[in-house]
Image 1 (cartoon, rainbow, N blue to C red):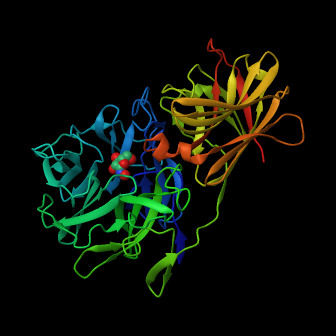
Image 2 (image 1 turned 30 degrees about the vertical axis):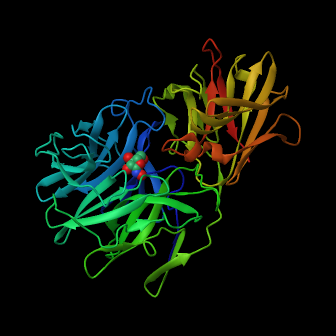
Image 3 (image 1 turned 45 degrees about the horizontal axis):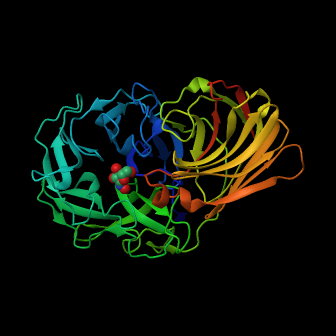
Length: 499
Ligand code: 6LW
């Protein structure tokens, strides 16, 4: 048996997993993107299919005017007595809340709020009690993991919240999960921050409120000492086991763009680690507590595969994977086989409004993004194009602008407070083909009208869209977008996917 990480590729951070009736279900953070909280399904923990989202209605989630990397942080999914629960924080308003469903393929409930400070909430069902565990502060204001019991019907807090652990001394104690396994309550959390110093630590107690003893070999997972290794920032995990009694961890980490280039732009992704139990009842994970790109099992023991899988992504936006910014107006989008139609509003990609934006995650360093745009129905002054989008201050746009009856193709790079028009050509033709190619370090931009070959417009480094440069918790989205003219007038623009 062998497999490669990440098992879910592209910006899908803070994974949480549960098991129900032969299937594993996994959820991730979604921040300012709508619909909120993607749900994946798998029967082997390696091959995952996106099956939907928990929060699909504005009544459940209104992200209007939410800042980039605001919105939804770090969900937990749990299954109890035939019902799925997903608890999460809206850091931009509302705080901690959960939703539930009895049908994983159907709609989820309206939010039930838990008036508890902090982020990264988790639930544990234990006998007739439901524990809420999340971040908070102790009576002196020092950060830690706090816990109380709640009423799962109403979200009401039933017991005083108690600070149960402050971790092993690392900064940013977060992402806790409590598990009741045999005689112990295990508390797993992350420390060190979701960057290069990230780590996973483990504690246990015979009482859910502690005192907790620390695992003697904490941190149980970290790549902080693997300088130059392609996977960095390993932490924020959830534990599960399969029907054969094998235990596994899903966790987040990121792929840096090159050995000595500590930048990542694909966001934090989902990794899978084999877990084994020591005779003293602690867990060992990964290979010597590190997260690796590939694993193979030989004679019952996991060892490292050094070679990565070479994968290329062909950009194919579709309704299932589509992510929209904040509070999308679905009446501005129409899908038809390998075509879709977008109508712009005055909101541009440079603000925190609701631009017409149809994106999917960039999942591979190597990718090709191309489409043809029919400019005939565009109004004068309207803009339509493709964007490699990290956030409002960091995105690369290859666009068509209609002026009189001319079509100008522009490459514009928005990098922090700076905007650069790299190139502008007049194609004088309404059927325009746009193409962006990428490798780990560079995006290249091309366009053509009725001529045979593409015209090269320029290139841009991936690192200016990385979390290290652009800031924030998200990753690159490859999007088609459309902006109305200055008066807000916009025609429907046809985008057709091409080879
Ligand atoms: C999340 C925290 C974290 O709330 O990053 O890596 C934060 N861990 O647990 C945002 O994703």
